[in-house]
Amino acid sequence: MQNIQMVDLFTQYQKIKSEIDNAMQKVIEKSAFINGYAVKEFGENLAKYVGTKHVIPCANGTDALQIAFSALDLPKDAEFIVPSFNYVAAVEVGAFLGYKPVFVESLEDFYNIDTTKIEQAITPKTKVIVAVHLFGQCADMDAIMEIAKKHNLYVIEDTAQAIGAKYITKNGEIHSAGTMAHIGTTSFFPSKNLGCMGDGGAIFTNDDELAKKMRCIANHGQEIKYTYKMVGINSRLDTLQASILDVKLKYLDNYIEARQKCADFYDNFFRNNAKIQIPVRNPQSTHVFHQYTLTLNENIDRNDLQKKLQEKGIPTMIYYPSPLHLQEAYQYLGWKKSTLPIAEKLSENVLSLPIHTEMSEEMLGYICENLREILANA
Ligand SMILES: Cc1ncc(COP(=O)(O)O)c(C=O)c1O
Image 1 (cartoon, rainbow, N blue to C red):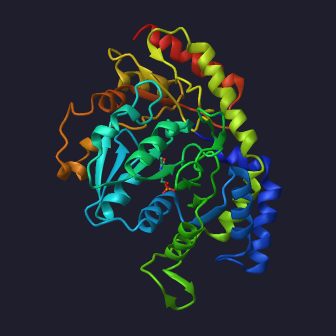
Image 2 (cartoon, rainbow, N blue to C red):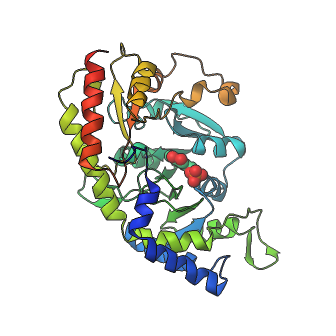
Image 3 (cartoon, rainbow, N blue to C red):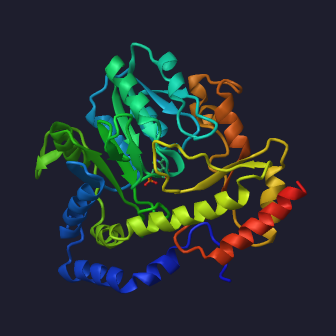
């Protein structure tokens, strides 16, 4: 059996090596390195795949969020709502632009924002809700869009971990993650479900005006070369990365299926194990399993469990070891321990198992048997 890794990008690459190498070779032969043809082609193919009018490729998923926030022309004292149990990107870019993050509690079962706690966090200064589809499953977009409409707020959907996930609205409409709000953002970080071989990101919108503005911001604030219409940044998707992504996009559904098969294997093995809670599936969303994250019973020593698994050659990760409201960088906002108990509890008890497109049943079986044995003595 091969070594078990959290992700195995090299084996994945080897299976489509000739296609990737040819795509990169073509960019090199044309010397089309900056904003080359592959960026446009990939953007168009991705727009078709997710079903959005505009895709604006950019340098990474964090820039995508920064460009999204910047395009909304928010007042200087604007507040935005964001889950605390989350990756830092949306919080840091909003804060960096001078807006105030207002943290909201998460759901213990789905790990996404608890939409029943959003309205109590809204003030006259609230302008944006950031909906994050954590670990590969959509947040409750019906509720989020309803609250946003009622309070006249923008919604940015961070779908860095859930590209390709489908959400079924209460009216029975099916939408791709990232296309239901005013703006969607994503990341092509190598380990993402659609990952490149460096950094990359994209923004989705169906709004023509916002699309025009975000393209302009991402390109130094210019629509015409050397004519600066607004303050912008330089955020381009590298053409070599776009050429890689265009190849991998064709396989995204297969990649998602492979991840779902791993998740089903883990689910079947641990469904009745009283010491852990397997990921709970939201009936309104497909789960693309960017991570397979379970919750350990509170009395289990997570460090010890990780150490014992590592001794057996099984890596694990903790996404995320501290909720954002307790991080040093955000202490200026005045949040104290015990203010968001679910987010805090999740950070203390979650554990992510290896999941990727190249896992064999042998690997999955090995992980499951060992974890079961270690849990039995924990
Ligand atoms: C939920 C979420 N948002 C945003 C990002 C930022 O993406 P990038 O690393 O491409 O800047 C990530 C990356 O890990 C993420 O997981």
